[in-house]
Image (cartoon, rainbow, N blue to C red; front, side, top):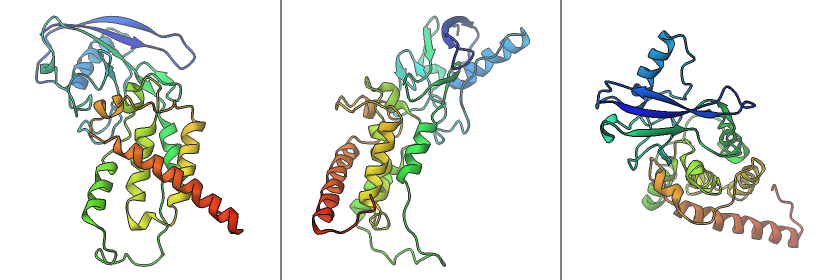
Length: 259
């Protein structure tokens, strides 16, 4: 099938970007979206032009690097699907497809469709850890964990950090990402010692990176390829309030706080 592409091209972070039109001919419907871009890039390379720069790695919906806004929707038209899992059979011959990078102040464009998502790494580094005693690994059944908590923690840990939630949010908020990382530790016994400090540090880093505020439109949940629930945002808010109350209580009785 033949389709028309309008691709965002930007030389670097300081250059002004623009959409460039490309004709993609004889595209096989069973190609993935990224394979289609590979075909375009092969042609551009043979013609001596600069290929389209885009992030990719596993191409199995695991790594979260293939973030693209396709026709105005993060990762394209299919729910619970990353751009690398999206196939060209989701489109039809003659379609016009607009492709652009994530749009957020905290995700500056590096080149073309590639953005710098290291802000996510800094949020995790700010508090995404647990204390663990040195020595041999403890027995897997040594700490009983309620199944509900284990399931909720696993659901939160499914977040692959792709940034679709930020791209979809009208405020470019990273609340769903941050909440999922807070939840995956805070729901388990191993994450309790740093629970209060963790949530404050991660929220503070999120604000420092320049992400916007959450206004509960749930666009983040709608485009998340792993269906991470906004319930985690409510859980983060409760933990944040709790951490503040704990700090106030410690201050009232003259006990030092690690936060």
